[in-house]
Length: 490
Image (cartoon, rainbow, N blue to C red; front, side, top):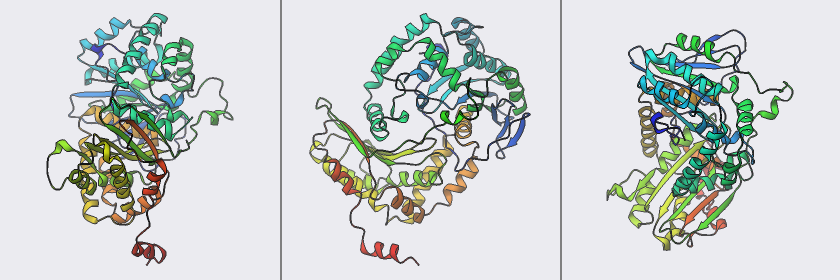
């Protein structure tokens, strides 16, 4: 792990929202300016590196970072954990700066250097005063292209990462969601954890790290992002100075064989994993169907549907109406401590579901059954009022998340590295605003009704109903008036 003096935030969640459709690939040649929206400018260098910015002339600070289209999904079973390991070592010194020099340079300018790894991305970014942007770009370039990866640092970081893994293993939500991915995408890269198994952490070698960089840190898979007071042209010039030598593609890759490096869409597997531990006082259960990708036309409809199901925690109090039908029902019947609906998207797939926590061990069966019956209801009985409430919540969540240059940079980086373009907030608000209750019901019929589910359960789960009964809860008999309407549309 990087020094605390660098304010490294390894667990920072991705807050950005992706676009509905990717634009056509950009033709390579001279640096070509492209206006993705009123607020976002983008230029692609001849080696394929994209520079994207949102310039705010009144801003005193800027966030500049590199978004890389490579995370744990780009690893193999044998090298799982390499991307995260690299992130740790990036701050341990380069060919041009020792670890101490790196730390002092950042601290002396009052800046913050941050990084995180996800299943599909690795991100390094820095926040500084506008006048220090050239220095921060120089540091980012040095870290990404000239890290020393010394054997002594590698050995030290093994213990650091193992301790980090021990801490993650204590966080039940993290454990449940890691198992959810493992069972939903069995035997596939997306099912692996980000930190990797203990045996890999103990055996990863310098050659593994170097090979990962060669295969994945290529210009066409990287986006240099700036948000705040940095002008677009300034960042383009800095990119040409510091990143023009980045290779376009991995070494020894011909145009004929490039396809093997492209992601293969994973198969969703209806399945379950149960880890019973009666020393844990609660049952912690995640249930999901196959969701949508960042680029899917249903992306925002999935989010609106998620918001209709809602989130709830008994600490909210005793209000008779808590924002969703499911929260009201669970609250009144004391079925759970909390629940959280989610719609997690990746470049070509996703998981849509709910995370339930309860200490009411004798009614786990009822909790899961009525939760899945609520999902089924969404296929034929969604009101305009609950749709509008969900849309308002979603728009507020998205727009409020774009508070500050770092949040804007993350939004730009995530969208462009995933889809090739950025939807500005006004476009997002317009798209969300156009979604109707009919769109929600259509989405639910296609994605929720009578679909296979993936289940991950940890803790006191003896009362969790049989997997086949869970699936049956998602396909009860359709009401006659709905069946007639579907068979005889107007």
